[in-house]
Amino acid sequence: MDKKVLGVGVIGCGAFSGAYIGSLGPVFKNCKVLACSDIDMDRAREVAEKWNIIACTTEELLANPEIDIAVIVTGPASHYPLTMQALNAGKHVYCEKPMAITVEQTNEIVALAEEKGLYVTNAPDTILDSTMQTARKALDDGLIGKPLSVTMNFIGPGADWWHPRPDFLYKIGGGPVMDMGPYYLSAAVSILGPIEQMFAYAAKGFDVRPIQDHECTVDVNTDYKAVLKFRNGVIGNINLSFDSVRSSSPGFEIQGTEGVLFIPDPNTLTGEVKVLPRQKLKEAVQGRRMGVAWMYSPEALELAEELPRAIPPIEAHRGMGAADMADCIISGEAKPRCSMYIARHITEALLAFDVCAKTGLPYNMTTTCERPDPVY
Picture 1: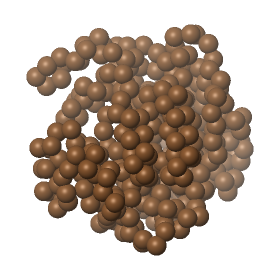
Picture 2: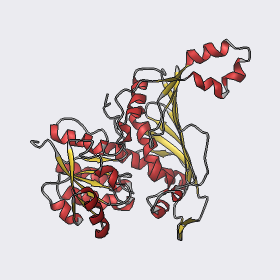
Picture 3: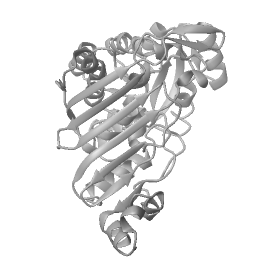
Picture 4: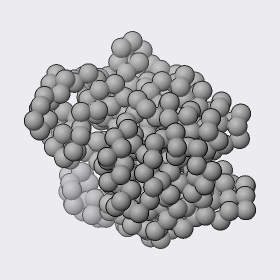
């Protein structure tokens, strides 16, 4: 492609649209947001005025020949129809997670994108962040030996304490699995590879949620426990809850034969990647009189070493995936790291939580993907 800067249209002008508009252009120079649309045209005009872009209907946005990429920042139920609409208009797509709300929909998206020779990429693009890339490099460099298991936990009271419009999170397409699960599973798959099989239990702590000036009926499960088997033999467990209060459980860590990686939250990305080598802990334990008791104390974790960043950190944590895709479009060579194949695989895994909970049986994945190329 001759263009060096691609035009972007943002569909959906809700709370998170500004994160994309503020990074695609100001931070990532291969993109420039030209227009925005929303079913609420007043909201679209407010956003357009704030960012000095054009407010228009979605049909007008997709008909604009200057727009190369549609960035979809809407509720989960609209991701599939809007992605299909954008593809049929000849636009590349970057869409918020989840990719769709059924596996059949994800297959249709992939088939149409392949037919038209267009890219579809999906959130979360946090797998491209410096912290996640540092964890990936540590694993690939063999710092913890052979990976054995991964533990992931997102345990909290739900989004109604802070989100301005949280109702959709308690409807079909919402819940902690569809909302927060993509961050954890995408990080795990990007580092370890695809999931092969899983099993899950699910529950619902509250039937009704008080939200600001009204009550919201909870239509989805809001507390999940699952076990995952990855294709490379790693076993994982993940807990996702909108019903609890807080937890001291590790957010994200990978155990290996020669050490353990402590990885920052794959959503907030705060903190540093640390490694605790097996030999270092062994020497410390054997050098103490009460070694076993000390080994299981919080003090022993202080032996963990902070790893240098594999790539420099950046402040913008949204827009990385769209910018990475833009590089691929411009060069015509590289494969987008937040690819539709990973997104389809993650979406199937997310949907499998409830399948397992309903059937009481393990779920064998029907899709697969390859680990994305590292950024470093």
